[in-house]
Length: 391
View 1 (tube, rainbow, N blue to C red):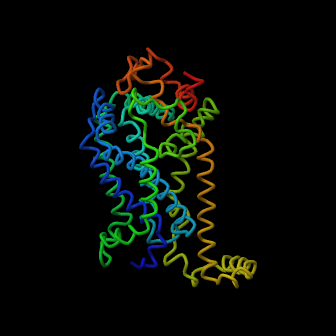
View 2: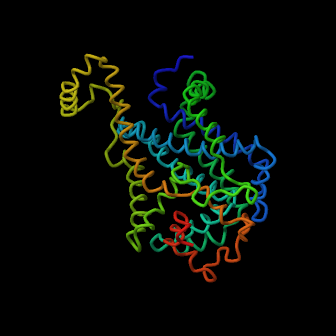
View 3: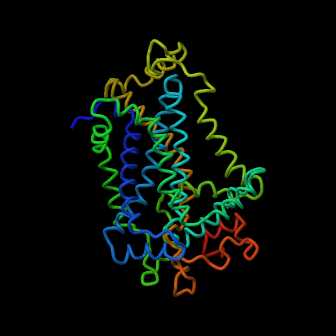
């Protein structure tokens, strides 16, 4: 099947949409076997791994697909940013909804992180209110509110109902309404992009088989630092907590909340700051003289290479290289600060044989008076990253 030319312009956007469909299907299967109750959630996950191997593979597929969806969305954003889509008047709403889609995406990661209710899910549930508590003025109220209203049932409803509805509305404004008006509609679009998604699906399937989440304790107990160096979708959330490893006080809050939030606002409102222009960004009749001059200088520098591979191949190579370089500028720092996270090792200490029951909240559950460490962001993050040193 031949892929239409315009699809390559939105390669990662189409792949992200297709992977979201995979997430919808795999998540639907998991809801049939998951019990959203504090005393039963982790037991239901263990039952999947001990008795239902195929469903366990679906669960790990769901986990790894979350990583690839996040990567694809970020790459799609980088591609759109480098193409200056924000300068097109007709794309203002598309740009805004695309940036806003990051919020439910993070919401999926956070709630999906908590729902299995293994020890890392419980620990992260205690960390989220602390993060919200650092917000100026509204922080204490938000922290208390999140602690008071949290139940697994509510987290489950947010994950499988509220966030999907928000995502669907934003997606419809962002792209689905346009796709449905094309010949063949959404079905043809997904069928064509399924070909592009095949390599990603194969990688996800292999990773789900080779690197499952250890959930068979106490019969099979992982090593304490298992999960180091292994990228997971959780890294994108943990990146906001990393400043607490190296800084204290306002500097940690500045780097962990205010700067990311400021960048998000600037990116969301980019078209409105710059004043979007009509027509296509790539239209040569609208290109400013100094931009055309710079392009001419660049083409003269690359003239020898252009003769060898041709101008069209050179333009495509330069575009791909620019996307790759910007993506690496984002992902390399993320890997550098997150690789030490032993995301699969919690069960090594928190299990029946160690005297700490996985899947049940401890006596200090949500109690910052009985256990003051629960509201200490530095302690919580240090124990997460270095459990063999801080406990």
